[in-house]
Length: 416
View 1 (cartoon, rainbow, N blue to C red):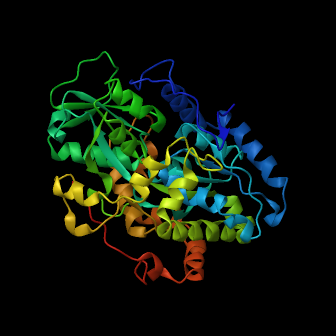
View 2 (cartoon, rainbow, N blue to C red):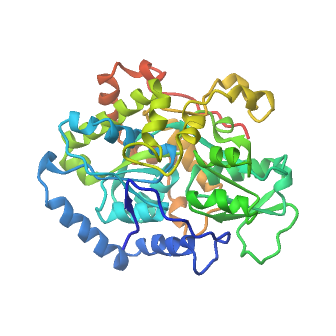
């Protein structure tokens, strides 16, 4: 049974700082995902998906959102909270909150949810590793993640010999962290908790985002790289500090994207268009209503979409202290003029191509043989369907509304 809740804060997490733990959430979930790659295990989930899909005709299918309590899910939750799906003529169920990426993938494959936000590299694993037919239809945000460390850690070099957590092997966080470590002469390893770690090695472990702040507070890890607002939460609690923002390494990158099943894109194109319209409208509203968005998503909001206080979410969504990070040297690329998190929905082909090249150079646990067969240009065309997001952007004023070039192209900038 997939663990989830309906728009309520998750229970207190199990803390496990080892990717080899036999009792923790991480180990179980990685086994689940590995099992999805075998037809014998995946078949019942796919059958359940088929049965659910056939229960509805055309646009009668309700929008069933699956999400993690991170700011990457903002457009989906704003679209729901502001009634934007209903304004598009769709029915929308209460969003379902999951505790880990493995759980949300399992729920998506089995059809329990049909609109999810997912780590961009994880979409590669779902489509090409597990061979589940789904596609990216839009970005959810740009930037919005950071590397947070213990207060006594003052540089990347000081992470040598220590343990750092990532939210998932197939994540932009893992890619960027390993890139930064390499530039500092450090080697990423994955070892059991009791194993020795060399002074030039950094041990990587997978933790669910909700577990990271408490793991840092207990010093089970020396740092973590993850989506907001967990970095802001660690700052406000005084248990950690920002060492680098992810957007200061890869300019205006996307961690999470909106992911839909290919069946819905093919058989329910109008439904897919309306879903995308609502999500794009949610992003546009968020850009102009950042404090209101923090309140809407907070633990004191009417729907309690996340367990986070409005103050924590506002520190991310409506940040006014970015200049302070620049003054302290935390933000190195001052000319990029970025926000801590921002929102624009168009999925650039150049980004997808670079993502494929980058994940191939990143240490990832499990069977990665499918990555060797991926061609960046092919993936940019095959994994992403831009038909719906282009129409949605046009309907709200065109690409200029989001600061996107009229030709929908850009050049990727990565500086570790």
